[in-house]
Structure formats: C-alpha cells, structure tokens
Length: 158
Image (cartoon, rainbow, N blue to C red; front, side, top):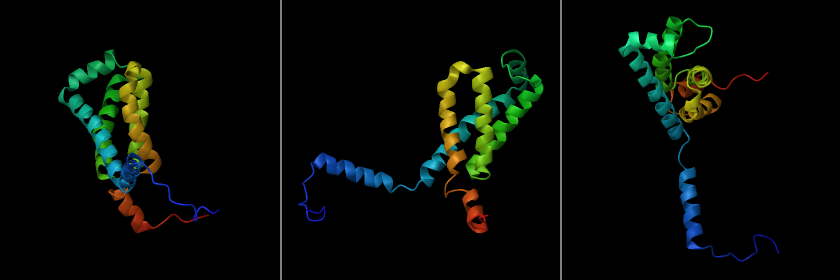
C-alpha cells in the first residue's frame, strides 16, 4: 500500500495547533530576527562606549589599574575600545559592513572574556551568539549590505 493510498489519520488538536504555530513561525522572514540581533548587540556596545567618553578620566584609570589588556598601553587600549564601541554599533544598525563590524566586536568580546572579566562569561555569550550569527549569515535583507549585494550581483565563480 502506497503512502498516498493510506487513509488519513486524524491528529490530535494539540498536534495540529503545534504544527500550525510552527508554520506561522517558519513564515517570519529571517531578516526580522537578524535586525533585532543587530540592534540588541549594537545597543550594548554603544552604551558602553558612551559611558567611557562621559568619564574619560575614570576610563583611563580603569584601563590602567583594573583591565589587564595585554601588549597595549592603557591609553591606547582605552581609545581603541571606545572607538570600537562607538563605530561598530552604527555599522550594525545600518547593516553596513556588518560582517566586518561583527568580527571586530567579537574580537573585542573575546579580549574582554579572556583578559578582563572572565567571570562574566554569561554576558559575553549573550554578545557572542548574535555576533557569530551576523558574521556567518550576514545582516539579512533589511540592510545596506543587502542592497549593495543585490546591486552588484552574485560573486563571479572561478
């Protein structure tokens, strides 16, 4: 007996409701959650950058006395960290050079995790997850990157 000729089995209402809900969720364009991921992680970094520039003296003291960033002198590390926190969120917000911005932010997250606040891994995982997604999958259709890529066409195959 083929599958097509088998009689339809009535599924329980709860299973039909679950399948219906899954179909609705599957219909949500991936661009929407990608936009929310971009906005969420951008906000976290943007707020941190604004705190740094609001009290630059305190920021320099933190980098000199508490943060153990290797190799870089504290004033340079503070300047670079602040620059990353104030520029890459704008890139993510616009969806412009999103993968590059995500890589830079992920690198900074790893430095913070390894050298500065290793005990704050739950927060760093909350940043790293969206950043990894954006790095691997891009910003989605609600972005300047998408418009540029659409305009330029697919990359040439070698």
